[in-house]
Each structure stands twice: as structure tokens, then as C-alpha cells.
Length: 282
Image 1: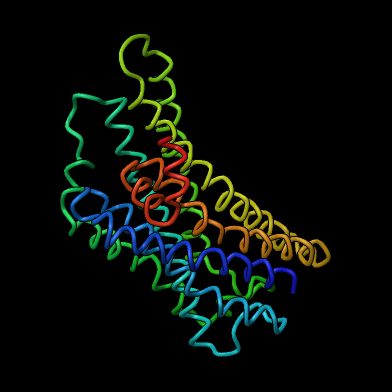
Image 2: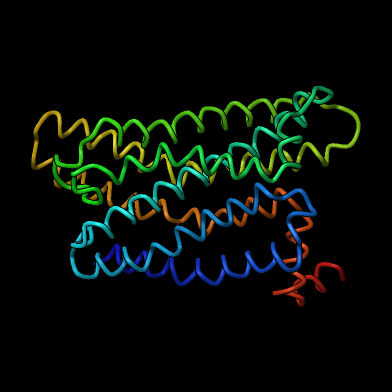
């Protein structure tokens, strides 16, 4: 019941935020002209998550971890995995782009080339489907974190791989960009500082939304191997709570948009917070 109200608050905050962000990207910022296609894809991934929340809230309000409708349960599981995978993939691409722009300056930046090709985003989405579809094809109770019926090697392999490997890449990019900023003694540091803000914001989103639930999942699997039911009952509650916490990425990602592109921030503030902009300019 408590988690259902937490998700309800997340939904009430995330729905208007993501709708306004979508509006700005499409009608005011025109992302296709500002080389912000990757950012727009993160917005789409976040919106997919927001759409799923009412179903999760309804189930939790009725003291159910999963929907009694098996097909709806599988669709929800697919959508949540697809959202997480897409959000992580495009956040990693943004960080790699900043890494090449700052640390490997002067070398050919393949990410910058990809940003000019909208079809690349479609390819990334299509590559996520082979990893995501198997999560809804099994006979296990796909949305139920309690019990050993959910244990599948593929499910856990995808779950850990799509978080741990990208997090290592993000930390690597962040460390090298920060070191590059420290070594720069002369010249304009504005570009470097902005790159640091981008990668740090992405790492913060990861650290808050994805890492805790990943650790909890690993602990849960370890407890199940020991067949300690009392400990499992506790760990399952912690895991479910941290999974609900992971849905905060649809609220935190707009911070990444602001750090990545000052044009988006200006467009958003001028549209929805004109008084704030006037005070800042004054």
C-alpha cells in the first residue's frame, strides 16, 4: 500500500513533466534541427514508463505484485524492460559523445556522426527487442518478485548486463573527463565544465535509480540459493521498494536534458517559467 502511494506521487509529478518536455522538444525546440535526437529518445523511453505506472499502482493498491491477467503482466514486464534498456542505452551514448569531445578531441567522433542520422535511433530500439522480448515469452510469473518461479537465467543475465556494463562505461567516461578538466590550466573551461555536468548527472541518475535495485536483486538471488525463507521475505520487500525507486528516472532525466543542451533549458524556462527567466536576465 505504501509503495502504491509512492508510485502515485511519481506518476502525478512525472506525467505533466514529461508531457511538457515532449511539447518543448517537438514544437518549440525542434529536436531534429538541434541534433538532440538521442535526448528525444530518452524522453520517449521515460514516457513509456509513465504510461505503465497506473497499472502498477492499481495492482499494488489491491495488494498484488502482478496483474492477474497474464498477458497484461507480460506486456507490462516488456514495457518496463524496454524503457530501462532504451533509457540506459541513450544515456550511455550521450556520455560517450562527451568523452570523445573532451578527452579524445581531434579524433573522429563516430557518435557525433551518428547523431546526424535519425535512423541510428531506430536501430538502437530494434536491437533492444531481441533482449526484451524473451522476458515476456516464458511461463514464469513474470512480474512477481516473490518466489522462485521467476528465476530464469536469461532474465537475470539481461537485468544485470544492461546496468553493470553501462555503469562501468559511465564511470570510465566521468573519471577521464574530470581529469581532463583538472589538467587544463589555460583557455576556456566552459565546455569542459558542461561536459562534467552532463556525465556526473548521468552517473547520479544511475546511482539513484538503477544501482540500488541491482544490488538488491543480487542479494535476493543469493538468499534464494541459501533457501532462507525468513531472510527472503525481508529482501523481497527491499527489492520491490528499490524497484519503485528506480521509476524516479522519469523525473531525474530532465536534469540531464538541461545539462546537455542549454537551448532546451532556455526554451523550457521561457515557455513555462517566464518570470524565472526575467529575474535571471535582470
